Amino acid sequence: MPKHSHHHPDNCLVFAHRGANTEALENTRSAFDKALGYAIDGIETDVQLSRDEVAVLWHDRFLNKIGLNDKRIDDFDYHQLQALINPKSASEGIMTLQDFLTAYRKRCRLLIEVKNRDWEPVSRHELKIRQTLDLIGQNPEQRIIVSSFNLASLVYAHQYKPAFPLVYNFETHQTIADARQLLNTHAFLHGLCLPIENLDRSMVDVLRDHGKCVAVYTCNSDTEINKALQLGVDILISDLPHKALMLRDQ
Image (cartoon, rainbow, N blue to C red; front, side, top):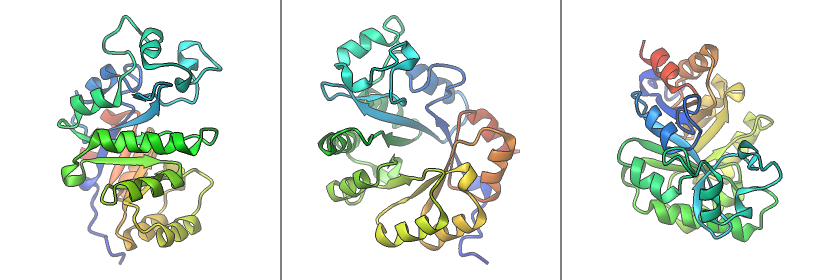
């Protein structure tokens, strides 16, 4: 028997991916509020920096969603982003990380992904990490977790705040061999966040043997959600949190 066979799906926490993003513009107050209309356990969101170094919530590499196909968040100062992104909507405009934390940290758990891209200077990666961890500040009971696809950024975050729970996001091409190696070289990690297609029993067992958190993205179909539940993941991230909750609790 694997060590953690007592992990029952009831322990699985359902996180809304960028809020209830099928019901409102993702990563906005409206999407988060709609998600909290369900009995969700947490919200997942994404942090980038404006040109003038304000931490804001935005997922994509570019501003295609607002018709600026070759422009990035960091091409604009925060006040410009406010004017560009739904300026007439208080609930679907761009949100700062600070406002997000103020509004939601007492209402549910939070998983904050820091978007550090290859083309950015490392100094910018590190600034984003410091800003995010500084804004979070005290984190009792580890109700807030920070994640990234950028491993060097997580190493830096661990040096900056050694006790903070950090999760590394796997890409689909990464394997169980990569996971084993990583857990040996980066034992500080709180856990891994895996694509649902990479999740299987042996991957879960490796993480459990190391006492790590198992998070999974993005579980939307009944098959994906049930697979995550059957494997007893800790955190299930879904664009359809109401569906995940229904399947978990039935």
